[in-house]
Image (tube, rainbow, N blue to C red):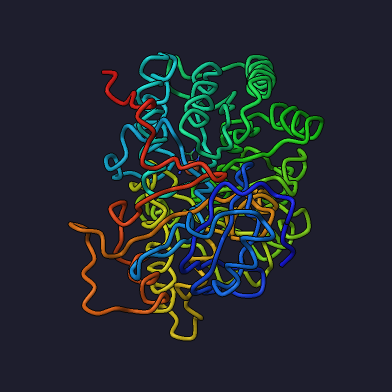
Length: 456
Ligand code: GUN
Ligand code: FE
């Protein structure tokens, strides 16, 4: 723990902090002091008993420390490593088809509407607000093929203070839906325009992601061009992989020269240590080894995997292969925009695997907590900035209150912090998230100046 005594302190909190580290899935720090500097970074995290000493070193007034209540704790913000912002408008519906039919029937027609910037503004404001209220401090978004609407998503995330990776979707083949197509040239040019214009805005917490929708939507030529664009600009990459059996079969047919689905992306330089691929239910051990080798990560989207009857990711096997892994909501294949739901579905899926094979080592809630926080930030290569309460990282945090009046949790007696966290993960909702911070800035409750949700 190396403190930063030169930091200019803007806020100090005292209470219970729970987070994950490399070594331990659940580190509980009771009666702890955490100082946030004026850049929103964690300046110190120390035992409460050090108050007087710390206040002298850092020059803050001990009487201005914010004290948490018994039933409160701070945990790191949740990291949604895979969510489709436009699909939020039909979340909770249309879950009666397998993936490829679902895309053609529901997804592409809805996404085509995002050419309309006013519609995009409405939906994107709602999804950013909803995810922030649900405690998602970092989101890795797919937008649509429309560059200007995708830029708008970046602007809205920035305005509300969410840390975000935003991708303009690329797809130059197999799109049956009218008005939702782009040529190879358009896809390439608009990707470059998207990246240049988003970087030009200099939003501190929002970055562009190179986003081929998935191999069946892209020609080999486009995949190669996107791999080159990502490499030349050192950018993040996101896509989908091995989500459903039919899709895997289709990729075999479309890319007969490739050894595997993973090999398709690898060949076009799309597997890097800044790549995150959603799903991966049907990856072989050899493919997982290739993920490990390249440093690419996976996003586990359990609600979507069940809702579209896609499959069940064997998380234990992914972890055994030391592949970086986070959780994703995958709205609207996943019907919930809450990472708490993703935590629960991840546990459910692991338990179903255990029902099928009693020898299967079920995930613990501590492990899934880590996937939802530090694991996600690692999967997005943002773990140098966020994911836990290490000194020097940005303060991205949830102030959790399990005893919120009118909330879903009844505390019968005063419980310890581990029980409080477990209850919150299993039973809690946004009523138990009193405050959300991103890079030290309070983003929930929303600042009144941002109350633009009522545009209709
Ligand atoms: N594969 C390609 N596009 C999509 C999408 O929008 N959602 C899901 N779940 N899988 C995809
Ligand atoms: Fe997806």
